[in-house]
Length: 495
Image (cartoon, rainbow, N blue to C red; front, top):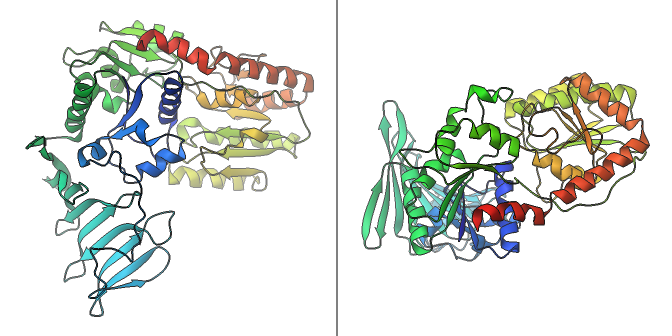
């Protein structure tokens, strides 16, 4: 068995999660027994899993596991048909599409919030005390059952969380107490599990216990994709293998690897308390070679693909020019440089459009980017497209622009290549030559400024023959990064 160890399937996922999903699908397609093990509580998980084309049996969430709800199917629960609110005594009064009030003898005693993206299904219920403050809040799972209950300190901060079994009994209890002037979770209690109670100081300790329970049932290989989970994986007993996968460049200075590893990567590379990973895997061989120079552990530092694609068809340069970027819209990705570069392009090619698709790194950065678009008078030419894993803007793209200064590999650029879209990117280590090759499938701009990026784009858009050749090269690169080649590399470490 192969266990992919993750935090969650988020509403907005990063490349780390997308890489896990692709690996899960590839392993399944090639007759590997694999499951995704998740730490974070997520009452919307079954819906998020479905959005990403995963099957319920592919995923085991720690809270679901101890609550006994891993295999629970969805059964819609109307807010007007709740057994816990007898309508002979209480009244449910609709306010709008988002919530209804609970009234008793004309007094509001609670509020029912509708489950997001549904009509009239229970999402959460708050019950008020005599002073009108929230005393208890119930959270309902997407699948239609009460999943978690919170109670509160007098100041409104969380005092206790109970994660429930289907019969309503608590499976996990989390206590929140004052530490100084802050209220923090201080104890995770696993209740009546195998006939006894178990106490843990942190969620990660509970997660380690969970991973060991899974491994005791069927020993396997554990692959840790997030540094927050490395300690839990290292503490799994009698695993077949333990692997850490490093998706991002792990060096303190990505231009000078010899300066050492960032602290957050030390455990992944060098282990903890005498425990080490069997393999430390990076997306490219040159990264693996640099990390190997810095390790003090006995782990084998190797390379295996971060992702794979299915090649589409090459393109010809048409009249419509759509420049695109798909990924996280964040300061560290220098999305503002893409917009500034587009301003120079637009001055020469006023018919060109720019589409930026993804989720913003912060509300502040979203405001900054939109103000920049307005300031540069590009409102009618720049479109921010909502994050949607199932529908990307690549289909109509002409060129993919990337302005980040550091990439472990660049799976969004690989996806662009698979659509026949050449890539113009800032020249960064580990993407340059490994993925984007000058004159083959795009260009690496050494002068990492918006003007430098824009000039290369304008040069390329002025040569339809070169564009066609680069598009053909993009498709060839995609073929080299196929599922078959992906598995060929991974089989070295998981078989």
